[in-house]
Length: 153
Image (cartoon, rainbow, N blue to C red; front, side, top):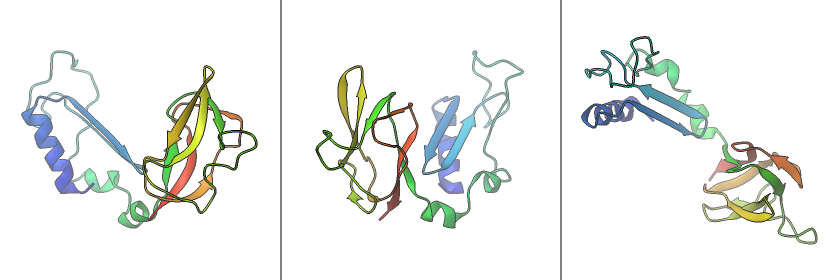
């Protein structure tokens, strides 16, 4: 996300009276929150005068953005969408869905998470090559816990 994109988000927030925006993508995270005297709008009724205000300004943006090279070369993470037990294969006798070096697409099943006796197939949702498996088979995972690293292709 570059400065032009951030300015466009701020403009959309202003036009649509949106008070807060948050985005996370491949290690880059930005949070914009509208408060008193921010982007030219009065505070919304649910904001207090003492609420902290985070706004993207041209002077603040360079410190918020990681260097371009690290964003381009950073591995994406496939995170657990739920709490449960992580399984790399559909059954104990089967081969794992993916190994390090396996090319995946958004619809590629990478593992199963068992939650409340239900087996949930988890898809990669990214395109790339598996560069690291972060969780051992049959171990518990938490919501949002990284399970795989994927090198973009």
